[in-house]
Amino acid sequence: MTATKKAPNQIIRLALILFVVSAITSGVLGLVNYFTKDIIAEREREKTAAAYQAVLPYDGEYETVAFDEDAWETVNAISRAGDEGWVVELTFSGAQSSITAAFGVSAPDYSITGASVIDHAETSGLGAKITEPEFTDSFIGQTEGMAVTKDGGTVDSITAATISSRAMANAANTAIAAVKALG
Image (cartoon, rainbow, N blue to C red; front, side, top):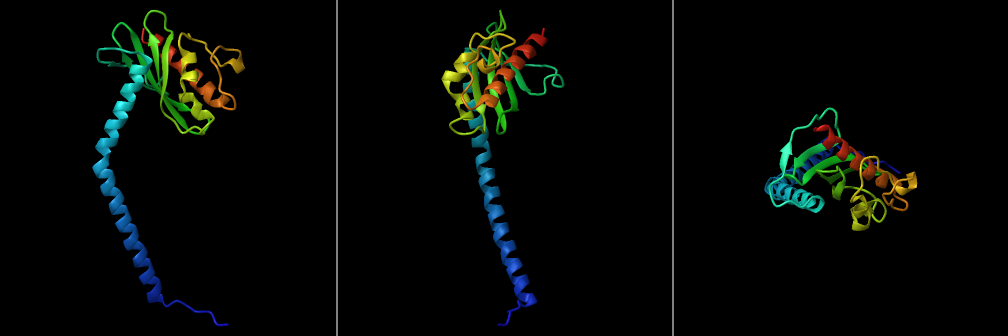
């Protein structure tokens, strides 16, 4: 048996073909991104606005307030909903990756008015259940110091998704503390 050797010019030809295919693919992906970035950004804004309305319904416009970003690293934004309270948007670690959620905090008593998951990559069928009303509704009326039932608290934890459940409860506690820190 004789081994066939590739000529040096054949290797260069294959490298050039690979380069051309990669350049064309990159160009197409760049064009698709260019034409869809505004649509994607608008859908993200709509998704966030819907989450804000779900956690603290308000007829006016949510007013973004300044907060100490160094003290509250997981907090993305705090918005005032008139005299109704605040909406706190946070990004925090879940079981699989980051979770972005919004929590409504009432003005008079600093209790949670609602919870809504904006974005996550939790396991389908397990941690992804953090988006279901059966779970998010268990936050309504909760106050600072809440914990999941598995830890002796009153927030229903999701079976086989304790890390995701704890992460949501901790985020809700952070939302309340961040609003209280506003003064």
